Image 1 (cartoon, helix red, strand yellow):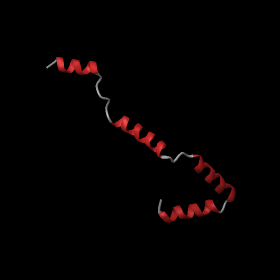
Image 2 (cartoon, helix red, strand yellow):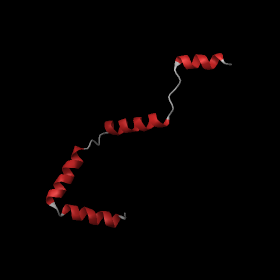
Image 3 (cartoon, rainbow, N blue to C red):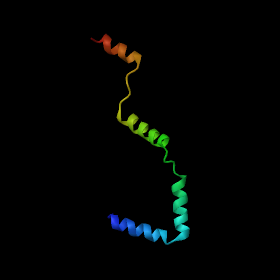
Image 4 (cartoon, rainbow, N blue to C red):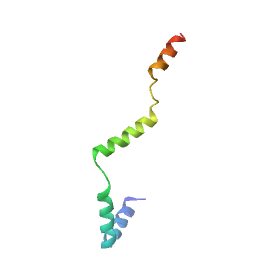
Length: 65
């Protein structure tokens, strides 16, 4: 969607006072804090980075050498 289309859509929404109020209230319910962002980054990191082996796995790994 182009920027101009987004602007037109926003203006249409703004012209509807009840709908605009609901849109604002829904937006204000969302948590935009750094704490919330950090939680989401941790979730992504945990999905992307494999867990480190525990102590017992390291012992097995070294015993094979």
